[in-house]
Image 1 (tube, one colour):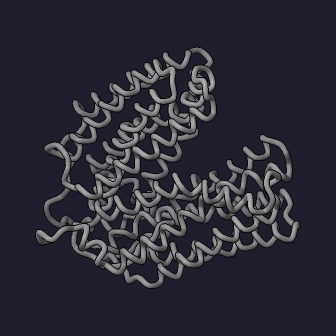
Image 2 (cartoon, helix red, strand yellow):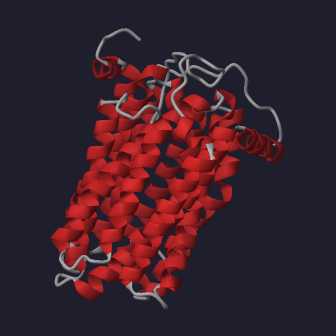
Length: 434
């Protein structure tokens, strides 16, 4: 691309404008369902165990079928698969809204609809990650990822507030069924509109598509990722990082707030908000300044993760919400910066005809480790206190960084300088957030 400002070029691209509009609305609708579904379950059962099983049932099919979803994305097209999942979600959420509004919803119905919605995400996630390289020129991938991830992060900060206002419209403080029906209905409508915007954008197809059976296609992508030394090292590295960071953030941080901080849950909320705001800032910087890095992208990732390890060492000594927020703000910013940069590198590195399967594998590794990391952190807190857990996680994180720097090719990873058959050439097309 010329010296033209990539941000201006990005928003001049009509495909990207359709993408941002539809993706923003769809992400906002997701927040309405995430807030309304637990209230619906509790209003039906008043049992936290039932709520836990419903939420688990929503995430289980995504973990089980996401590799299958990636294979189908590569066989057909990201655009087609994503468009179909949006209309499927529209139908499922519309049915849920109608059942709630007419007071005909039952727990078995909630279980069934949650399972089907979770199954749809197993296909929409790899489709959404594979479609962007077919939507914008390769030089605009990182700015585009920065904007899209930033939009989603902004919605994560503001969406629950708007969702709470709509849900409570049904009759606070009881949170009546009509408010819940409105929330599910809004999410259904958001999927219909984003499917319409998706249809407005054109995609370029890769040179070849897989015609293999699903099992053989998945096996082929696993072999290809394993044989690529840099890709293999990065996948294993991020699996370790996700394990030692995710568990303490999800489990030890609430325990810290409950045991040590005066505000309890309110303090936890402030700290998580600071982390979310930091992530938004990091994503914005990574998108606006795509060339900000050390000599290589991999070296930048290693440096940022070593800083994160040092920050973790301080967490066990937090005794006020502002202290935790002051640590989580830069930690979130560093994580957001890395997320955009690495995601963009993967989209340029992986061959277009294998992008759906390979991105599905990456998401399977990161998301699949989340419950294991939480369980491990919970078990560790049976024998360690919060300070010891954060210190142990920090030391493990620094050890992973050291091993990655010394014994893997991660530090040499950088963006390709020319097309290598990995989708680095310009493309026009369509994309949308799932």
